[in-house]
Image 1 (tube, one colour):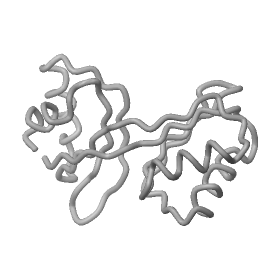
Image 2: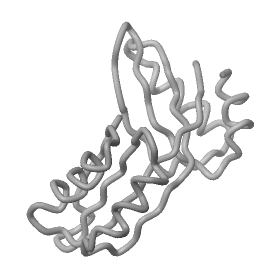
Image 3: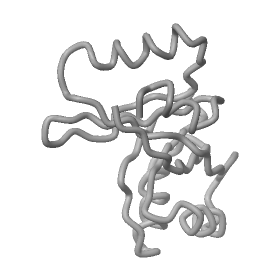
Image 4: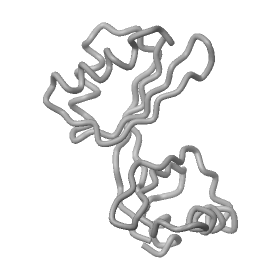
Length: 136
């Protein structure tokens, strides 16, 4: 497994129609590309967008200045784990985490190409130690 560090923007805002449109519009009008996104409603009133961009700090500044109904806006460090795209690979990854008592805060697939799956993974573990544990 290959492991690389990445920054993820976490936008928490009022869950209203057009919220994702407004956030993605701010990012694209800044000339930044969204490399991956995970969007979901926490409840009827709260929307959460987890975004990996080409420049997370600039994206954060622009979103913050856009006058959106933000509840919070953070940039978190995470890792991307590149693994072979076949049945059981996610199970192997999560088994390593379980056996080493590592709590997974966030995990989602961000891409698939050329026989590989890339998974974004956020934990409280130091990324260097996490990479060593995962064999990266």
